[in-house]
Amino acid sequence: MKMITYSSKKLFSGGSPWMVRGVLCLAVVVAYSNIWPNVFLFNDGIVIVQDKFLRHWSDLPDLLTHLCNAGYGLPSGFYRPVEMLLYFLMYQAFGPSAIAFHALNLSLHMLNVCLLYHFGCRIGLRRGGVFVATLLWALHPLHTDDVTYISSTSELLWGTLCLSGLLTLLPDFSLRKIWQAMIFFVLALGCKESTVVFPALAAATFFFVSKNRMQISAYVRMWPLWLLSAGYIAAWLLFMHKTGYALNDVGDPNYIGSFVNRLLTSLATLPTYARLIVWPTGLHIEWDFPTFPTLLAWRPLAGVLMVGLCLLQIFSRKKSQQGLALSFGLLWFAVALSPYTGIITPVDAVINEGWLYVPLMGLFLGVTEMAAGFFEKKKFAAKPVVSFIVAALALSLGTTTFLQNRIWRTPETLYQNNVQDQDWGRGERDYILGLFYLHRGDFDEATAQFQDLVDHPDAPSAPRLASAHMWLAMTWLHADIKNNMIMPEALDSALRTSPHIPEAISELGKALQENPDFYQVHRILAVIYRYQGNSVMADFHDREATEILQKQGELKR
Image 1 (cartoon, rainbow, N blue to C red):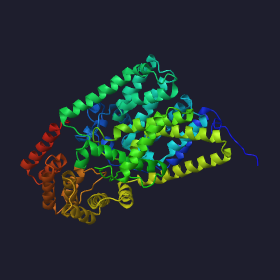
Image 2 (image 1 turned 180 degrees about the horizontal axis):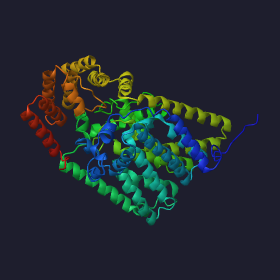
Image 3 (image 1 turned 30 degrees about the horizontal axis):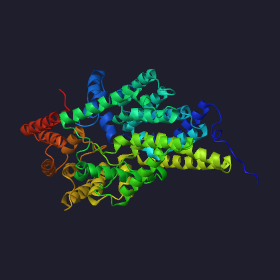
Image 4 (image 1 turned 90 degrees about the horizontal axis):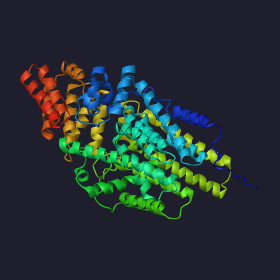
């Protein structure tokens, strides 16, 4: 029987580059075609809907000189002026329209799809493999955390600017092009802090494309990029030292306070990430991931094994072009994910699906290039067979993305997904269910969940317990909560009809006992006491909230 062979250079690469890009973008549009009814969620309300700096041109200087949550009055967030400027322009043009902001994220994702395809071709990979890699990356449901969740624009933006900067550097990485790429690097730093790894991504790309990859001087020539990265890191460290700002100060103390535990826990996340990449089911906005204080558990051991195999691949002296491409993909993944590991500085979550957006770009390019070379070398089966496999994978990923978008529709759908599919501890489960019932307006059920949490002998950490008391106060008042936000007007409306104001005040007092610096509770008490006509106590709690914000170095007069 005659075997039909194919050239991987021709597979999936028919038509003009613009036609190929059109096919890729069409696939994205279809996979995300059901996002338009989705509402603003959680941080969307903080950085867009309720950000007072987005509403008037006179507030633009404040927007560009404060952390991203300052417009809502929160002493948290990051300095992302480029992202916030884009939100400002969108808000001025369309107002708080969820459809418009969904269109922004979807457009950025399609732009990244085109840039990734162009980048893969520019670094010399097989066009067929680049097409497959870009298609599967574009449709992967892990990216719903960045595309469908509106306030994740920063991840999309730094992907855009990172790819643009690397395309600027290609093919020769001359000093002139390095200075040109600095423009994209600076803009990207204004979008996402993880952009500090851009020089390392540039070095990994140079290692793959250049015959001078072993010349140290070639990497030293990139000194402007390294210098800017070091300066940015130094500025953040100085800011955190001066203000006491912490990226994560409410998590497991065993994780936050121990470098070894953070390292072991970071290794333990690798098999979980691998599973999510290969089998993307059970996706969540939040993960209840344990801290690992020992290597004697299967997850950190599996992580060590994975790192060891990757290092063997990367530092192997005898490598084909396909092996070199795989090493590039692994290096890219490790470098792009490194700011999120929490090893050096604890981050606000141990594991997060949205962090894989940029790391998967290079990984997918490297893996598909290796696969294409293997199939070509082995004269594997026939082009229709490979086409069928790729089409089936794309259809499966696209369908999963389509279904995942519906989970992001409302706060209730997200809570239902989190509670049903993840093995939360009892306290965290009660907290999530309480918030779910509170958002739905089922106050009796919400009260039962939060009461069970605060009465449970295995109480959570003080900050979490303080939050539970605050939400329990809101259930007593029957306050209307949207996107985890307590709006003054909703609180005023609840106070006019609630017979349980004393119970609410009692719970808020307990919240302050657990966390005296809980400025949101002080603000709520100020509203309640002012409603009761007690201006002395109202002014007292207003002053306390203001002093807490000032102490944390975030409030500028």
